[in-house]
Image 1 (spheres, one colour):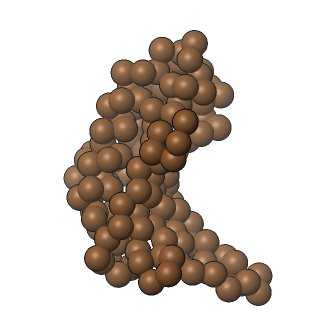
Image 2 (cartoon, helix red, strand yellow; image 1 turned 180 degrees about the vertical axis):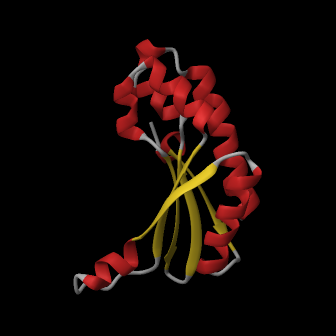
Length: 130
């Protein structure tokens, strides 16, 4: 297993804030909703630590969430879907955990089809935000 099995990551020419806004807009366009945005850099700074910009954007779609939770409530440990926007060495990245990984962690649930559908939406969000 390599990183491409776990995450989908792209670089963008957008600045950090524009990339975050683009993810929010692309999320809505895919019929999903932003649940919360964690500003990791601000949180760390409030504790006295410096870091490069990082926001964790939690997104969800109620229909998919309902279907997944009906299969196994423990899958909620890996919910909601997350898309991260961060900078490293002057470059801005957009990265998402691939929902297809859920099927591998919970093979007995038969999540493959739902996970593939959500994975396609997540990749579309990342690509549109690029």
